[in-house]
Length: 174
Image (cartoon, rainbow, N blue to C red; front, side, top):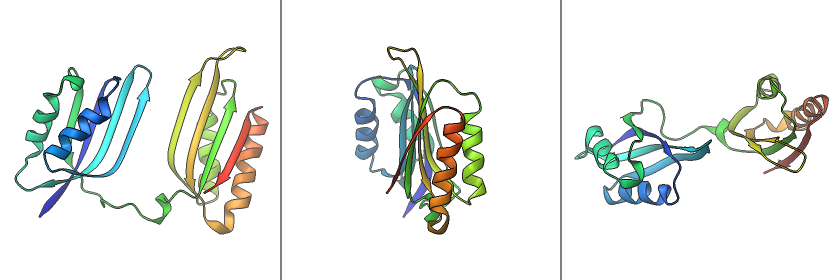
């Protein structure tokens, strides 16, 4: 028998961080479900839905992770996960969209509204500032589920919204 929990870790970004964390979880007999990792500024964020054996407590997992050298000073949380462990159909990625250009305050809010209007779901979103010869640029990457019958119109509206903000937009059906 197993239980479902959520691990959340925020710490300084280090090389080998994912290998150390996932290696220890494997050694403990923990199975990873949906898992994300991201670098946020100089920090790193690791989040995973896990299945843990009955003999392990949430506190013991936290202690085991806290003992890892890569997680020195990290904020670690292991808590019960009361939602479904498996995501539904609207979390299946059907399109990838990349928008690039100068800073455009409100961009994520405007794009999010477009997806809602078409009954689409943003499954993953990543936005980063990158330095270049002409100054800072921003790249926003969206992985989304879009209802098939609305995909063409939704993608066109996203591209038009980006164009209105003088940003480039690339789309790809998956």
